[in-house]
Image 1 (cartoon, rainbow, N blue to C red):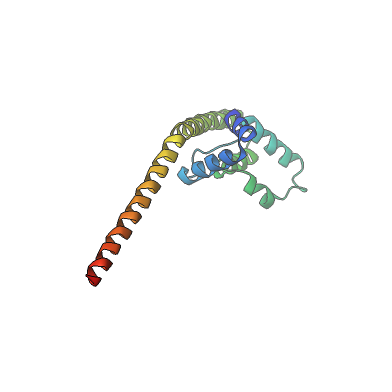
Image 2: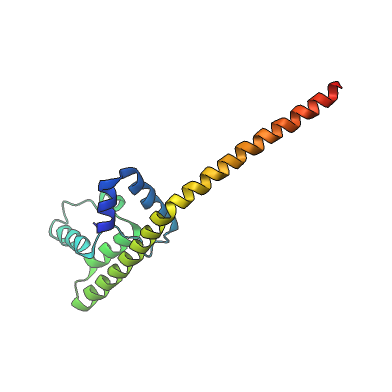
Length: 142
């Protein structure tokens, strides 16, 4: 597992789930990755060795769409040049994922503050709306 995700999961499980949800929402299947190329390669080797015992449909939910695409491509060919290209693609995706997660974590506090301020504004607005309605009601009886 990428170090940033393993550290995050061990530190705060709820925050980890929030980050993964945010990454999946922003991803179009081309970059979000939680596992290293070595881990995906080991899974591919295990599947090839035990292909009659492994149910691929049960494995798919454990991977992101990018990881699944990478895994299936590793199962199809083992040419050294293609492995190097896939490893480079995986490293690039890992870098993009790490940059996104770091940015999301850095701006998470800001988002919380903005949400809190917006809720305060809504509460004040409701209070002022109630006050206006009360004044209108008073005018009826005067």
